[in-house]
Image 1 (cartoon, rainbow, N blue to C red):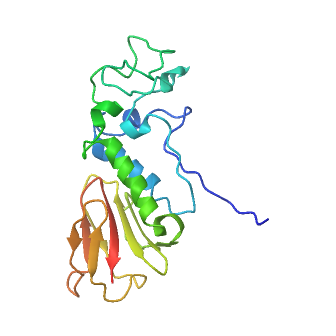
Image 2: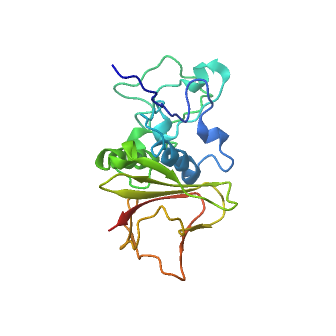
Length: 219
């Protein structure tokens, strides 16, 4: 049979500290953590993203006590007690504490939570095959090292992916000949907002700090 390389991108494993403690800003910064999820689920190579348990709710951890301190029980409940909760490693000084906002129960059905953000990204990959298998086209950027911009496209759909990891807003130029000619506008898959088509005097999109935009190019 044919052989091919497949990428398996991940943010963390038991060999890596929890991102909640390695991000440069505050431990509770949802925007910064969610940006890594945005990149994970929009990996430009053919891939199957891997989620290390607890990552989807922002569980912290580090390697101070070997693997144990990055393998605390999955936080299913705000009280850290209930059906299905493991008890193999529950130190009083553990990273995960009751009613800290970091549990499935506390984030379930809350649109602004990290859990629901991850679920939305997974659903978008399912609903838009171009995000999984479409052609990857990087867009040239002048000097924004904290910005990632590329297209994913196939015969049915083109999606413009803009990821701003910087703490300042950036303007992404749209002069690239890779974009479809005369688009009717863009629809942001993450928010549902519609952007008007660019004009000759306004050939850029402003992306706020620590923000992601997945823009379907409307024909």
